[in-house]
Amino acid sequence: MKIAVSSQNLSTITGHAGRCRKFWVYEVEGKRVARKVLLELPLAQRFQACAPDSAHPLDMINVLITGGMKTRLHDNLMQKGILAVSTTETDPDRAVAAWLDGDLETVPPQVQELPENS
Image (cartoon, rainbow, N blue to C red; front, side, top):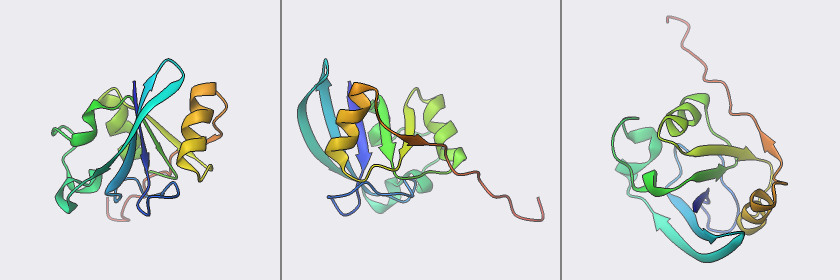
């Protein structure tokens, strides 16, 4: 299993997952983290810059943990088979450990606001 955590500053969990370019990717065996690697995306591969049905470097993950995301990104990830989780936890390692233990405190995705003319 692979779990990605948005972390633009490489030390805390970042909100606005659609804009984030840096992700810690944890490779998990059972309930143990076997490996942690940094994935740094070019500007053009941020979720917000990609079409929802296009291939993405994070398509290989099973879970995305972030500090916040819009409902559109949440739904797009779920359609790709990626569990999208927003949390109040700020430490990437603690968030992954809590998720593996089933104890991660989660929050719902932010509702996408539509322009007044739609």
